[in-house]
Length: 82
Image (cartoon, rainbow, N blue to C red; front, side):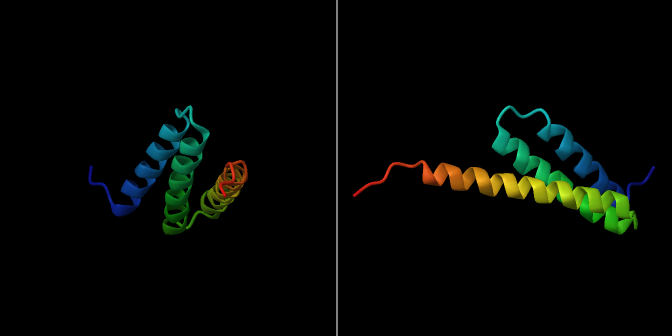
């Protein structure tokens, strides 16, 4: 069995999403899940599967939204120095 580039990207995406779901740290979970979803977007586009790339593009966007929100909240709670 010979793996094509499309196969490799699909497998990498699956592994990244699976690894992300084992994370206790929510930031790591969202970053790894974002990477996996982004790979699935590429994979879905390569195999011309709109449901695959559209759903993963949505999930990737949700991950970015919450990562930005977490980093902004973390930044606003930092003590001010004079």
